[in-house]
Image (cartoon, rainbow, N blue to C red; front, side, top):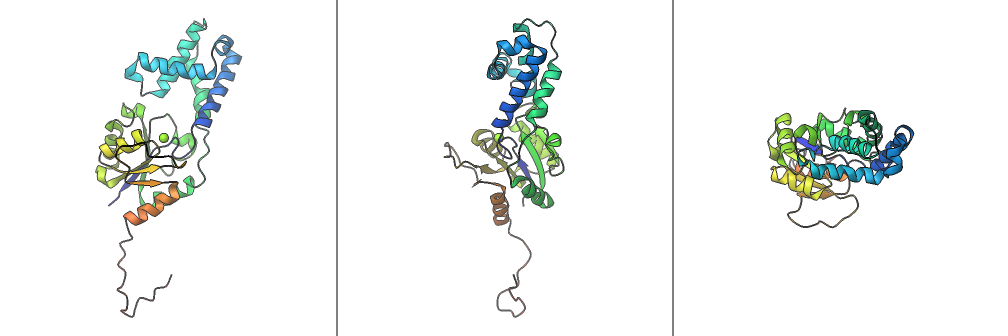
Length: 245
Ligand SMILES: [Mg+2]
């Protein structure tokens, strides 16, 4: 019996890269107005790459994208010659825009329907905020890599989800777009896995997900097939069942 469904967020429920690129442009505009030497010296892409530089230098915080962005901004400010820098205000500009996502069309109604039958939770490596995005009413809770202390495919986030859901891994279906983070990670944790493949990509290799879908409408059909309605159907020909509908 399936008790809960956990969902990846970025690239599963919305396209993330246009959102990140816009958020980085808005942050760059903000820097140009308040700390112009940073914006003149570094492009938005170079500022993003500085997060990778920080992650390589400090593997212990590599799973924490919020911390990486803030530390990268501090580094950029120092390199541009600012002794004082308000990283919280700068990050807030990015963070607000990062949560201005456009859900794929079927997502909201499908999650509403699913939430009536299953407990839903969000498991993300990124720093999306389901409250800012307006999905806090369909998800019972969300976990990210910062709260779990490690990013998917590490089992920590999946184990934490099981505890919060009071469910065994085999009672949980994890749904996500990333073959490594979502499918391998959740399968290793013992969950059932559903690969969201909206673009019709080739499976990259290795053990496949238990199922593959193009959108959440297909997820609803799939769950219906995995868990057929257990209402007893009268035997055919007994004279009572009229086959209405
Ligand atoms: Mg994803």
